[in-house]
Amino acid sequence: MPRLCQPVSQRSKGFTLIELLVTVTIISILVGAVVINIDFRNVGKIVRDNALRLGLQMDLAADQAVYSRQQFGIRFHPESYEFYILSVSDKGQPVWEIFEDKQLRFKDNDIPTDYEVDISGLPIILEELENEVAEATEEDPIKPHIIFLSNGEIMPDFRIRISDRDGEARYEVATGDVQPVVVEKLEGS
Image (cartoon, rainbow, N blue to C red; front, side, top):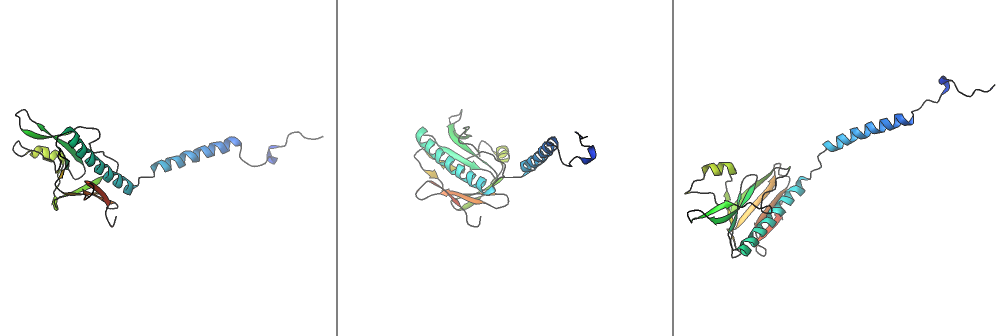
């Protein structure tokens, strides 16, 4: 008489479809967690983008100064910068104020960048904005390092070096001969 069912001991030894799906799911979750924790940031590209953005913002500030017939400026700090506009105080005196604009503002990113500024060939010691505000007086207010005049000039000549903390990538934003603002990659980065 033939047997319809095989005894348990003679079954093929393997995994069921459910066991395979559960195993693949667990492995996928673990691989996903590892991939999420891997840092895909390209430091060189981020520093380059910061330098290009600064150059474009400076061009925009120069254009805006001409079109609005107002003076704009930019002041640097070790890790940031802000744009200024020359306005008239309540006493009728000209005063530089931080210009609040969504296009002319510093954009922070995940990679800390350092700024070094030379004005007319002389290095400038940069301080944090909070320290400058605390030290500013009515006789010695905060002023921009670079001024964008309403006649289209940018004063004085400048060189701004932008780099990441490890020095992997270095770019320079400077006064140009043909174009007002030039962005270049520095040698050795």
